[in-house]
Image 1 (cartoon, helix red, strand yellow):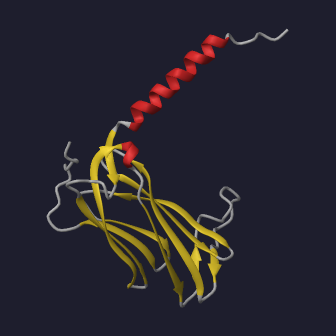
Image 2: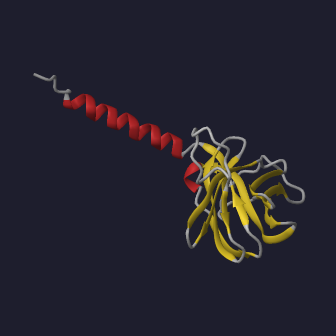
Image 3: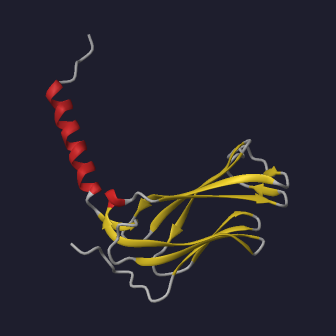
Length: 174
C-alpha cells in the first residue's frame, strides 16, 4: 500500500510557494516600463547590413519586478536571403549547423519584450517569425550603463546603449 502524503504538508508547501512568488514580484530590478517616473533612456536599434530597420528609445528604471510589462513589435522584409543559426538546428547531433535559410523578400515580424529583470541588467526577449514559422527566439542582455550587441543572423544585429546623460541608479518616485 502506497503512503499517502499528509494534506496539510501540501497546503503548507503551496502557501510557501505563493509567498516566494509574492516576494519575487516585489524584488527591485531593472524594468522596461512607460510608468517609470524618472527613467533612464536606452536606445534600441536593429540593423540589416548597416541599414536601420528599427530604432526606438525605451524608458527603464529600478522598480518592482511586477512592472516588467513592455512589448514592441515591428516588421521588415529582407531583400536578401538570411541564414539563421541555432534555433531550428538539432543540438548534439554532432553535425555542423548549416543554418536555416529564408529566401529574399521574406517578410518578418520581430517581437521584443522584457523576459526578465535582474539587479544589474534586463533580459530582452527577441523573436523573429516569418510566414513559415519562428526562426529566432533569443535573449539579449541589456546593460543599463553600457552598449551591448547581439547578432540575430549574419548581417542582422540588435544593439542597445544608454542615451544621453543617464544615471543607472534611477528609481521611480514614491
